[in-house]
Length: 379
Picture 1 (cartoon, rainbow, N blue to C red):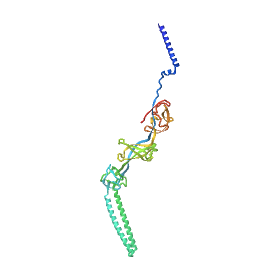
Picture 2 (picture 1 turned 90 degrees about the horizontal axis):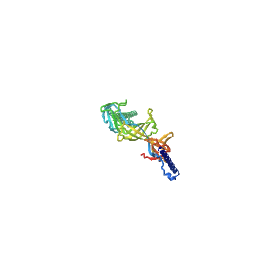
Picture 3 (picture 1 turned 135 degrees about the vertical axis):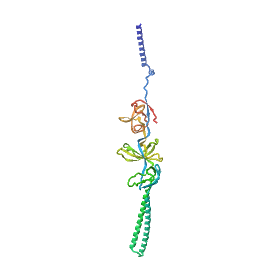
Picture 4 (picture 1 turned 45 degrees about the horizontal axis):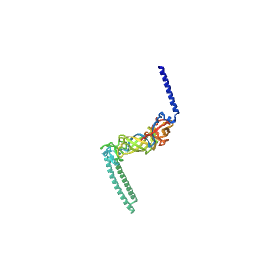
């Protein structure tokens, strides 16, 4: 029985082999239309890559640093004469105008000296008038031969001396008046009283012999100076008129726009930085001397530059390049780049604005790979 089953298995296997050979021979000799209908293995899927086209945008290289605000003008007011303060007319925070009296130094003895000098001036003027009349009489007598030439010359001399004494007395009066003018401490310009160091009745010393404490400090704050330091690496691009953004601390992020007004034109030998100044108009007096601020200087600006996102640009031994999809294949395209700021790179040459650039250069398919471009809107 087993022998019989074995024979059937051999016969069945041989029959299957014959059928398979027959089908294969048929396919080889069948018409092309029949062979085309036979199932093919699935084709490989074409990978899709995100692409972006270069865009024109303004590129600006900015340098960020810290700044300090100062008043446009600051003046310490000292007394030129010694005496007691009879009046103090200003306090800290007061707005003052140019020429406004802030305090008065009282010098009673000098006021008496002025009265004396004025009396002497009046006496000298009276004597000069008398000598002039005498001179005129002597001149008339001399013409009528009623006096000698010596007497006439003496009259002329006395008249000249009297006139000189009048000039001296007048100068003395003017001098005392000038000194008394120093008793009025006045504001040199319109501004704000930043410090007041005296009170009424204080005795103050004249500052002519040596420095003493100032009576007042007046600051002009309608314009604020912002001082910052620019490092040596950026000094070559520094010039008056470049844009500056100033963000003071404590003003909830408010930004004030200005321009570089002046710079020292020398580097500090210790820090290798250049002192740079920005003038900011301060009509609302939101800015105060002594404030700290973040300063951003626009060292260089390229309007309408051709730009790409930074991840789209790669580099190798030959230089910078991007991956571009050309006729469905990846192509390496060498480029020259310029400024890089804010996640964008300026393309100087080597790339047309219509190029489909692979958004992420790192890990992109190798050159020659068949891909499908998927445009991406970077905005």
